[in-house]
Image (tube, rainbow, N blue to C red; front, side, top):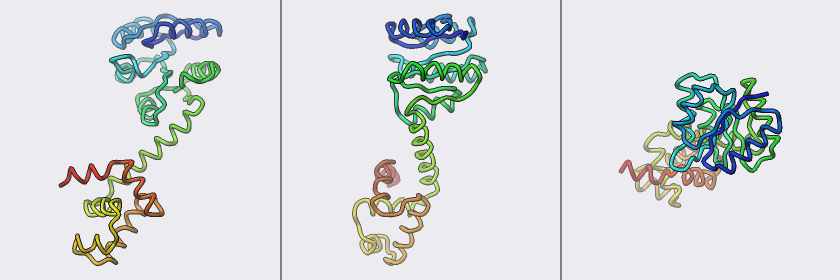
Length: 215
């Protein structure tokens, strides 16, 4: 039997969760839609597992997750949310969540996540593992982008704009061969193998806006 606390801004969902969890032999010690109230309750009640939504109306569940981590509270957190974005999964894991389950998942996913959290093991629900892999890929891309020189960023922007090596060379007072060398080097840094992939990466990370900020 696991003692739990629920944080979600929809009462009907909390009622449904309570019924589901009690049917599986677990105990719900309390519930709230407010992170501040929830933090006080968690410190007082010390549940084994906290089920936490990220979107709490005007507040964020990440606030509570950060407080749990900062205060070194023993309660393990499982995020239960509709938010299916890679950066949300990555942030939850960075803030110490043990599980991440989407609300559209089967109830068995949530029960498995709770059981894993009690043992302080990580658990990613159905489809969430792919989101985590995507988040890892995006982080690697960002790390690679930070290694680019201002000139390499400038050349990326000009390539995205459709300029040829000759045109870029004329603008930057470089030979077409030098421009081609720059382009090959930055593509190697970013692990892309052709210009269309480079364009997609540049647009994805808003390099045009970043370049505009430099000017």
